[in-house]
Length: 212
Image (cartoon, rainbow, N blue to C red; front, side, top):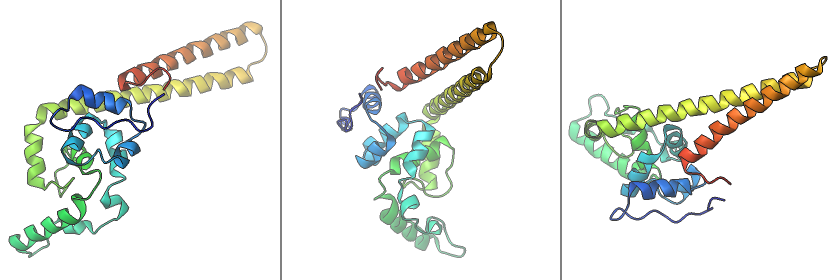
């Protein structure tokens, strides 16, 4: 069984990538991370880097922008607005919305994964996002590749489940020769084993226990 409320990872002074990975493996859901306040601040950035894109997208549904729905135009410069007025207004917007957002680290990481540096994301201005994008090219390339592998694995598990369901439907409708029913049963067993292998591999990759 996974712990319902796992201990928080070590603070930035002693945090390690393996420690974060183990913490995420022991965490029941992204909602738990959000509720614990672990996707904001410096440690939040380190944790967000370990998450896959669907997890990041799930996290940002808890953002201030989603829950409070502020006027997002405040993140952009108005036509004819002076640079000084714009910078001050943007700073106030970041202070009022991004600084208190519980998932600002996930929001910024998702922007980097998506190569989306237009507007303020996770409290970071476009120029700051561009700077991080340039500085973390190698890490982000690895993260995107891991996102794609995870997506491919999910597609394979869905396809395996659909095939098992299809074969089961055939079995329910099978009549006539006993050997045909036996063949169908064997096909169902093979499909079930294949799906179980895919699910087990996913659990191992996620660090889940056998009982999870």
